[in-house]
Image 1 (cartoon, rainbow, N blue to C red):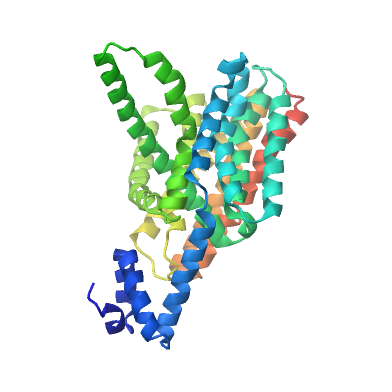
Image 2 (image 1 turned 30 degrees about the vertical axis):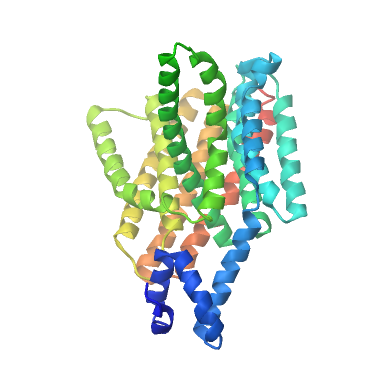
Length: 414
């Protein structure tokens, strides 16, 4: 960057943006010098408002001291080790409270930096209600309704996490898109942290074995458990405080894997037909179908969330359309197989839940495909595609409440 690059390119916004993106700190330093002597420029005024706004937002959300982060990590580890400390039945405890160790502590992270006391009370109250309700659920390992409730409990906690992340802006399209990107980024960061932890574990155990100290059991019981429980929390801190909530990986990876998943699902369907496999008779095959739906829906949403708001289309849009279309065909087959099992084996809670989840995903994908067609062929507003994603998200939250709370009551916790 030259000394006068800002003034030399004051009428070239692309160059200024490229300079800022390549070296933000250097750009800001040069900008401050130029703005003092040329504060009458409208372009520099816009940049001044932008940089100061970003700074104020960043300052508002990154005041969490590292000491608080460490305490939250220790709390996550403590929750994970409660059965050991207090001689509680682990088979009863872990399905109920591990989500609180992993997701609940992240919720407290955002509560600690939230400025709205009203939203703090709502989220904290919701988290307390969830914990009490979970603790009061009957202890029955043979109950399908309780099993499904515990499986969907993390989805309900993710709803509270979303509210804590978005705070008072929870209704905004951009806030919901930011939360989607946050989930993708934290997932990637968590995997990287855990991979690094595996390397550290191997090195640590190897070093101590060289001096004749066997710490494997203690290390696995405490340090590894602490790392597993607190990885999403540390990943959240990295995304929020270090990366300033800038999505870097999830969108890139989703765009890269979209064509790969499209090829995979098509080849898989052809191979399954060739092998004579049928979701009507093979329950495991049907479960794989349902897993594909969730994975492909997530990839499509991550890809769309990072799409530029332009009326132009690119190869990624056509790949996403093809992927959604192929997934809808898979969904139709899965739904018909579930209905077939209803007619053959009767109504059970598991089939009710699976049917509901398939219908929710089918409707969401159909709406996305419809809006994509409008976008590509009829030049609809790009924002409408994002609205289609974000407005449907509360439906999943309502469904999680139904499965966690309503269905166990209807089926009398059986």
